[in-house]
Image 1 (tube, rainbow, N blue to C red):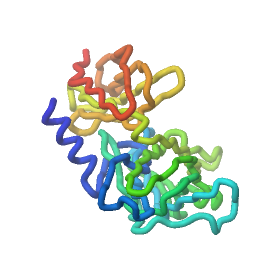
Image 2 (image 1 turned 180 degrees about the vertical axis):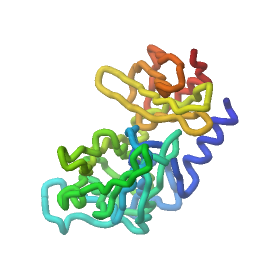
Image 3 (image 1 turned 135 degrees about the horizontal axis):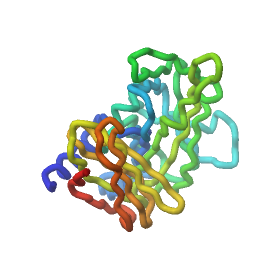
Image 4 (image 1 turned 135 degrees about the vertical axis):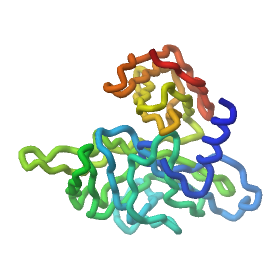
Length: 275
């Protein structure tokens, strides 16, 4: 298990990461002496996703912007991060604990009010039968994905936030038309204030959904091809973890109670054997 955990951590911090269901924006909390006193902080933006009932969900990321002044609604107050990795991303490849790095940039130290994820209009999904369906994306949704952060950025520090893109809630049926509308629902958490739950499920020849639930929070993820999972951005607290195998697998749902998550901590549930 230690080897598997090390491999998962290595994947998490490698430049370009692929694979947990959600969108992630990271502002990690570690000192960097080389930046001390230069009046800037470092910002990383990653993407991840929460489970949805589709084969693929592609979103077109065209920009990631930040805003420091919470008192103004002026569009001129938004500043694009340098080096944004624009392009099409399949949110459903972000599973098993992997996140997608969207930007890694230095920004001016000071107060960070919001992050805005700007999407293009050519988003689409692949249904489980293999058919492609365009995702109608209203202009207000393309430019209006604003996520509150309210974080003071100190010079010489590196900050990391996780944006969890909930596919299941973000893709909405368009009624009798048979089409689909993209109305993004995104959860933002500071990684320095949240923990991670990792583990593996056996057998591995089917996918399982892992859900951690407390009185106020519910976080979900799927296992990857190796049966591994990681629930990122879990607020500190006591959780019930539910392992729900594929209905066709014939295995029973399993629950684990009183799982305590601490800020900036990792809980390893080891290998969970299903009956």
